[in-house]
Image (tube, rainbow, N blue to C red; front, side, top):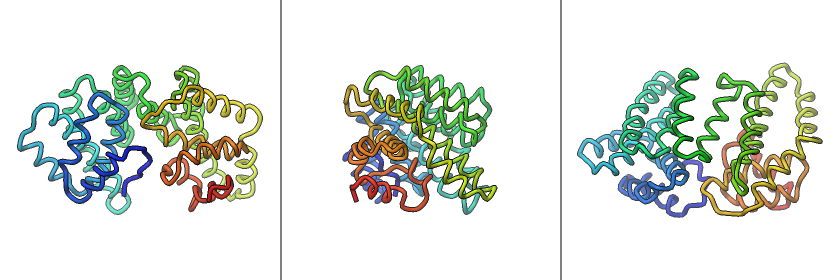
Length: 307
């Protein structure tokens, strides 16, 4: 089942339908969000995961001929589904996974050409460029093309931050500089401020691995429990306040609530964390909770009295 970290009942129904083989439901929900980039990105990724194992059928749908707007939707969906298939098979068959991943490029490029104003194919190409370890020039291009079309795109900024992590060839300094600049320039009420807790999650994951590789479990526990202190805690609270200053429903709110809920709890801000975790409900996101080991989200709910 795909990660259902969204607040979109239409998408819930479409994902269920696609998993049962009703692909027209996927096209229908993509058709209705062509002018809403963040909703479109969220939906196409969920539908891509739901269509794992159905890429031949998606190709057939495209080959039979579709009106241009529908063709752009289907090509975008095919690219997302191929990336999801590649991720699913990576552990058991890396060679097949890599080959499947490479197939995602052409439909995404075609979708971008058919819908030149749409930022979504470029956001998906950001993921493609990172996953295939393309050079910085090509990663930069995808980021610039996405934000040229939607300067405040949450998924484009998320993908860019991932590009700047140590794991993908960046550095902690680059990652935090980007996250802090995103918070500084984000409009009041924008969930882009949650890029700051995302950067902290990536940093703690990477540094935690280093401690554990060296056998320093106790040292890591001390480091982790004392991490959000003084200016880091104040900075996190300020980012939370900026998002909360102008409440407005947005597609990636649940993702941001997960990130702030986790970070504020780690920082000892239990009241603030509880407010965010109430909004998360039964839709936790893989990041940051998977970084905390088994049952991390359940433990967080216990700590704030929501279990």
